[in-house]
Image 1: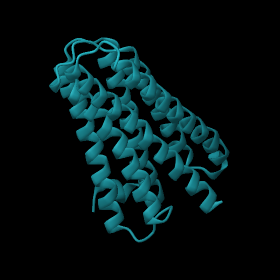
Image 2: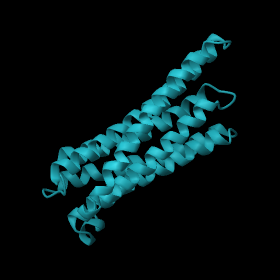
Image 3: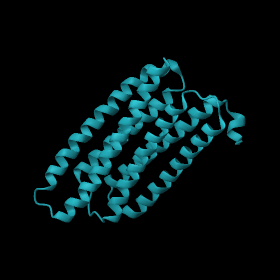
Image 4: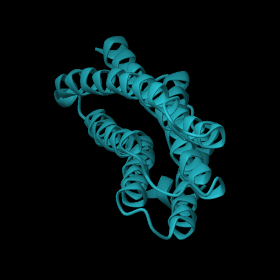
Length: 209
């Protein structure tokens, strides 16, 4: 049994672990914005994002280990698993997009990439706020507006993807089309998984009120 479990009540342990994942997600989104806004040393920044992803994986692993050791949880296990996995999926897609930028040797960031990164960062900030609000039921009224905004941002990302892919077919060589389309789709999928986080948060507050 880890030291943290001796020190913390079990409910607080899970809230702390979930918050560790959401905070790491905010850090990853910030790294993505840094990479795209200042498009230099892409490989080094991708390696840095890998380190952030690794920290996220450790936090996720700790949550599952705690679930295996604990009978009493603040929410049903499937809700904790769904929330954890959906946040982890966002992180994976952020890193996947950075990896594609590096491995495809994309020469420059594009306006759609900048907008996607901004959307993901805003979603992750709201995810972290929502996860933090789970600790205190008196704060649950703050969660629903956050989930609504995360969903709105996902809809905006859909529009960005549609416009960006359409623009690719006007004067861009086929190889560049393939590369950029793959990057754009990875970024848009990250926003989809952020919406999954929002849906899980909404389900929790409806289920336990």
